[in-house]
Image (tube, rainbow, N blue to C red; front, side, top):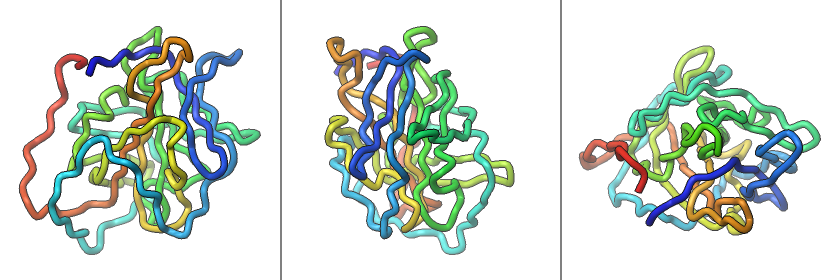
Length: 229
């Protein structure tokens, strides 16, 4: 299905759920993340899948290292992405990711990539009306098993994609980022059809990844499409 890419996006976290939408404010198209990090008991919300997960058994690799440090680069080899990571705060409850869609923002109030517990959150604009597609433009093309690496100031934290999901912004569940529970990484951007009346994408794309796993069956290598669908 053809997809239009326009504008910038905004984050809303309300009643325990992070809801994405586009807002126009004086400082430009930006992200606003409201309320605090969801302090979960380790149970992550079930997300309705939009990309089918490949049915295969996976086994965590024992003793996978946890490297702590400020994240500086997000690498997604299947998409040819190496995006600078900017730590972002949430003054007055608002979290703003970088205006430049080629950069992404890590919520420094949440889990740190490479930590033993909690789900680190990295988000970015899907595109820009000025500069075009951003680093996460092809996020919905990832497949379970694709590797993701976050380079930090003290090493690298490796992850493997376990799910790629898309759902209406109003239906985005809670626990997208957690301070407790199993270690993981969540990548988020906007997607789906562009609503011209609302000046916003209708959906959110959410990628869940976990520390290194071993697939029981071989997986064909992923490739980035040469042009938008």
